[in-house]
Length: 141
Image (cartoon, rainbow, N blue to C red; front, side, top):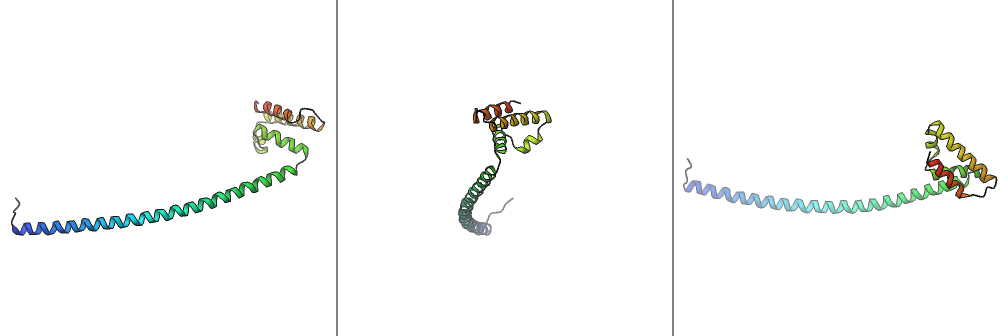
């Protein structure tokens, strides 16, 4: 049984007002924390934007450097090495991928490459169309 009298009513009204004060304090703290979080998020976003633009320009520089190195490497190749390189590129292969192939497939591709090298160095008339034709044969293996 609950007894209600002036003492209980007075205590209840005091606890009610302290409860309201706590709610107002909590609301103020919540607003303060939300403002801090928003500021931090904005700063983090700006830092990320700055970092990503640096990353992008660094990536461009790396790609450009790699392209230069690849061009220099190709220019230093002999004509036979260039033909081999071009055929492997058109077949979608690298030297490492070719070396990892089963022996029979690798020998077929090596024979096609050798044939094309001989044909082009002997002055064959097909040119790059011949390489593309042989590359298509290599893809179907």
